[in-house]
Amino acid sequence: MWTSVYMAQCLEKANELRKSIEENGIIVMLKKICTTDNSENNCYEILVPRAELEKALEIIIAA
Image 1 (cartoon, rainbow, N blue to C red):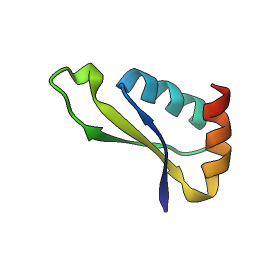
Image 2: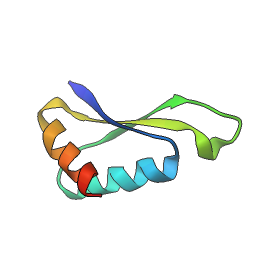
Image 3: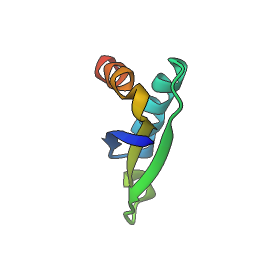
C-alpha cells in the first residue's frame, strides 16, 4: 500500500526529495495533486510503501 509522506509545492522540490529517498533504497512515486497556470508551481504528493514510511520521514527531515 502506498502512503503519502510529503506534499511538495513544486516539481523541483519533489524531485530533490525523491532522489534522496531513492538513494536510500526506497521506491518512490510522485503524484500531481493540483495544477496551476504556471506548471512550475504545481503541487506533488510523494508516496512510499507503507512499510518504508518511518525511514522515508527520517530522510526528509534530514534533507
